[in-house]
Length: 362
Image (cartoon, rainbow, N blue to C red; front, side, top):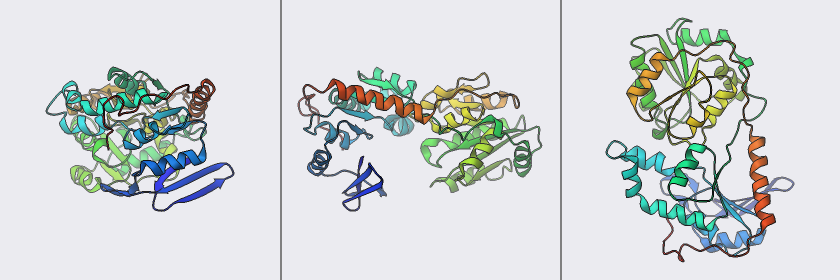
């Protein structure tokens, strides 16, 4: 069962045994679509009412501290679904200082994470890249459990040469051009401006088309950036998974700009589609660059990305069927780890934030 913050208190059982319990909570000031847990006592009461065998928290912010300080005996795990330093601090200040310097400036957040590490029985990371960073920052209970693709959807066998030719023609290019795809939210941390600039620059020396698929508040800015270039299209998100799988199997490469991914599902789906990758060398996307045609570039470096795109020459045929991890495998491993924690028990409470002299982050 899941406890979530929302507009009103409520309980929803969508299928027998699968429950969503909502606690009335305030809206986030920065994005009114979302709520956050603002009352620790109410959250503790709700957890106690449901008497969990194991407790999972999926946010590293104040709610994680609340979960850590719940007085029950159930073991608890923190799943790091976000990398705030990469998504914000490194992006905001990366042009002014090194990552090491930025980390020192944000030491309070690292101390917060180390406190959570001392309070939770397990910290789950979805990529080796992220695990290494967390471990280097002083966390000791981090384990990598990669997510995976939904089985039975993505495959190189879905390749459609006619779709590829039609797409290139719509971008004013012939069938011998390179067709790259980018998939994801149109938001600043995805760095689509970096991708657009690199494709336009590399396109001065070879014919290259770029199809971006997504949605988000930065779309108009991206359209303006690509204006005047007929070889780039900023398209809507594709809701039909079968259509998206056919597109991914038919393009020549997936290009990704974001170095703040904790896993990068789109890169995993590209691998399952036999689609070669061009991804930054930091962040979860880098973990997927395992094939002979995959390429890494120095994260956030426009010249490095331009150089890789200009020389990118993947095999267009006979890519084979890659062995990929599925979400079923992810959850099997996750629940096995939780079961082991429950079986081992929790003989004594771990120290609270107050006990180690550190106030939780809001």
